[in-house]
Image 1 (cartoon, one colour):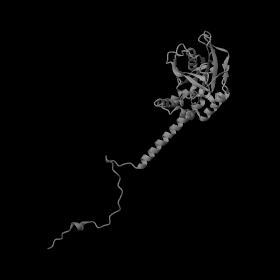
Image 2: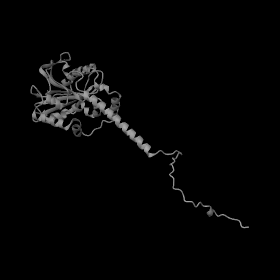
Image 3: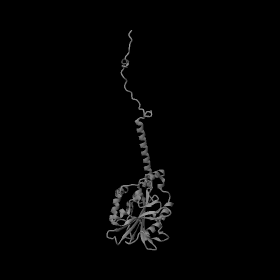
Image 4: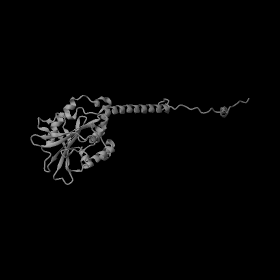
Length: 318
């Protein structure tokens, strides 16, 4: 009897193989991986939501900036007598900026006054501006005086002026003279900007905060000085500012809360973010971008043609 031996080869399935069926990918943890479309959809939703939040923030900031029109108080309300009559506005010493100059300066309120010290007879002129920070911050003597034909003849100084129990207000002091008059006629200039709750001549380093604090004050005090004056000792400009600044601070504190206080938590978050990095490119590339090249060209034209407002033949360079 013959036994039938079946070879392993004979046991092979001779049927045509079925088409390959795709198999779900298995992750290292044994879980089936999600489709790429899920991640793309999630990314699209996140990007769309981020854009909507940013647009909402821009709208709120634009609304606040559009409401910064008037000063917290009329600048003309500042007293004409300071320090118990030690400083008084002299007769005819109350002026206003020419409307075209005020437009170039970007301010919505301005004041020019010449005060006289009743004891020493020292005369000085103060210019106060209020307006949108993005317009006001760029008008500094280092730009405006040279454009009017002056040059700096003494090293600039940073000077602190006490205004109460808080930190001192920081001002920059500079001296300018026209070409050929360096020994006969010099003009000392003190200036600072009030942005937020600080006085500083370096407003441009805080430009990222302009969106949630869109308004700004500027003070500039100028007086003629002799060549040999020791400006660091008993400077009458600093004495005048020590009497003027508390008057300004008191009026700001008592004024109704302005639109800057309506931004709420969005402004606070942006403010914290802005203060982390205050770096900027050089001033030459920063001013035309933020203030507007056309504004600077118009200002330069007014300075060259002598159309800035004058006070008793003294130029008020903004």
